[in-house]
Image (cartoon, rainbow, N blue to C red):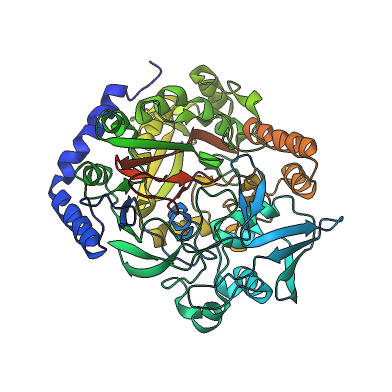
Length: 554
């Protein structure tokens, strides 16, 4: 009764996919093999310095980290770009390109002292002017940043005090600045590249990381070459000096069954987006499974409160309570992912655990609320109506960005919501059409997740000044003064207890007013061949390949 699209149905649908895509397996695996051969890696290695082939789910639309907001951009770019600081697993910050730093008493100036001897891949030395040029590039309107610029809200400029000292100035205190600077999206770029290669930064990135850009065959692979002069890994790294692998080949393999097959047939050494239903198979065979629960905003359905029918809070609440997410998430993800209770993931600082269990599946309540809201009729297909209009929620998505079997999950949501009388119109679109709908706010549901090890990520999605036009994620332009106060006050204070209280208030407010329906907590599931070692995760939960290679990492 609780799950209206039974678990067996989900398994059957998932099980049908390999048959449907079987003719493509040969094409993809042939491509993988060609890439592996071309880079000198492949499966026959065993040599620590050999190349690694990493099969990923999608490709970045742009490798300029200041432009792209995609997770896959961070996964690839982390190898090319270094950051000023590195975030340790315990949430502290440690030196990377900056050896040390000070924060002014008023929180408006951050002074960074740079590590000497660092050079970009084009030979340009790292200095204070380079840091300034890189950050200025992020906030330049011409860059058209869709995410990075929002991370350094209040940035008013930087000053190169001398070659090794740079001061970053803010308009207001920003407690999340160090975390933002630790992300790949604010990785430091070569000033020479920014100045001389402005039109081609997406296709030819130049950083100072352990790997330098090699080539990009669209929809096939991205090849990175080892930086032989690398000697500035962040403090706390397992080793120093150049990366272990001499080359990384990111092969783009969207179909999960093909990606898994590439790993088990030794045509890929590592795969990201390991499907949960294959975890047991891999662990029981010759491979390894690495897990990292992602911090930030989990997969969440953001609801449009500014147009009917979701302008009525009773309808939003009814939608949330019509979904049996415990059963749905368990069924789709085989117990590998947790059902979410807050828009923040449990591994994020500031997560409020008291929300667990506060808004369970309650179909009786959902029906009562819809009756109260006037949606009392039913049409011939069983959907609720009001004044002759069907209760419809428009949920478009970009097919090119689909991952983690979210289409299967959406089918379950459609089926469950229908029982309460909702018609959820889940429609796939090309990226351009989807972007147009988002910018035009022509949708009722926007489903997304966002990885960030910092509760300030809530401001990205709910603060009134964080619309997409300002590099934010507040797609529906919510303008709620109370929510703004919670989020902006939390950003302005460095008192951990005060921040925790403010973020708890914000999470509870979002749930109580049904502004969003958190669905599940994403987990980075990475599969590797048995001979691969040294793949680690950063504080964001993204895999790192600096220490990865074949054979023992010791």
